[in-house]
Image (cartoon, rainbow, N blue to C red; front, side, top):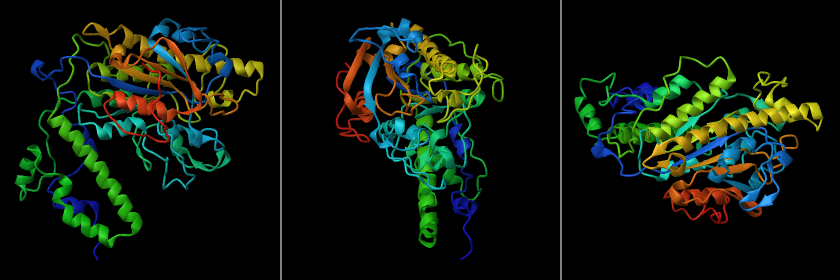
Amino acid sequence: MKPITRRTLLRGAGVAMSLPWLESIAHGAPVSAAESLSEPPLRAAFIFMPNGVRPDYWTPAGDGEDYEITPHLKAFEGLKSEYLLLENLWNKNTVGRNGHWPKVPAWLSGGFVERTTGSDLDSGGTSVDQFAAQRLEPQTPLGTFELGIDAPRTGIDTAGGGFPRALGSFLSWSDPHTPAPKEIVPQLAFDRLFRNVRTPVISSVDPQHPSLVESLQRDETSVLDVVLEQANTLRRKGSTNDQTRLDQYFDSVRSVEHRLEAAMKPQKRWINKGKLPVDRPAPGLPETHAEHVRLMLDILLLAFWTDSTRIATMMLGDAQSGQDYSFLPGVKGSFHTLSHHRNIEETRVQYEKIVNWNIAQTAYFLNRMHTLDEGGKSLLDSSMVMFGGSLKDGNAHTEENLPLILAGRGKGALRPGRRLRAERKTPLCNLYLALLHRMGVMEKSFGDSTGPLEGLS
């Protein structure tokens, strides 16, 4: 049999199927007043911080609304009435395994991460952001928006339990085997929000198939439907692994087609008055880590403000972030290295400063959300923003009672300003099930949930 290449497979469609081209279509196209929503939509964001915290600097004394502000929570002090301090949530499937790599994908899925060779990643589950987006009708140009700081890592961490480093490089997973690519370059992230092409320009069109272009523009035909017969032939003749890879490829293209549909037939969107002062960043990565983090948070803010997306994730660092924090006074070294302070006072103080700095960046983001007015309420009022990490004690790699806050009012579905203690060892997925319900995804379970977390409202 003559080898069937991807080019051959798609020839029947008379079109070059290019994912970057598809993703750039019609993003950020202007919306008329007639197409606008009558009230702000609900947004959800998940902000991840690696390498844990110092437990006694995070967990306060006191109950309900009357609890002390600990050193780690100091940056959130002015926002105390705007968030819930969540306690006793965990992912039981991360116990007794590597301290970092498998805990990251489990943070948003609760799944059991398999130890593989790296070519067959298995995160154990779909992350809650992707799970929600897959079950909601296309509402915005970007169904989800994934941002980060560190470039994905490759290889196997033989010293860390034999897990692929890629597991700790991605927070968002569209299925157990497919991480959702994160954008780490500010300009590219910004450009995803503002692509003002209203009509798709299809390249490499076969003159013999002009009707395909017309049908695609009328949204009558899927690119995959056009080549279905060839695709089935390839599946039958391919190996089991090839069939799996081909199915994953088709699924990914279907996903992009759905995004294309949302772009070409946009739903009603919320239009905020005024312009958020976020200019297009310069090419490449910023010179400093501090500038990089702020830019990405500003772009995330802009994504919500322009209603370009309503579901987002942001990684302040990967599983073992080696970012050098020597730019902080009194700090010499990387985040991960200093997290293993072994209770040596000098090292521990440096670690605490790094944790506090990352928390302060999140507080900056929440404060900006809190000050942006949307129809008489703030952007934060119409949002649910979870911040935290997959470790409690960064030095000991403990999994219980994860450091978590849930900010915002979720359009009245959350009652912040309190310390909410769940029963000890409550699945973190109980929280996600409750958030899914508030997003209109009425599933009976998610991950290892035992029921929706109570007490949020």
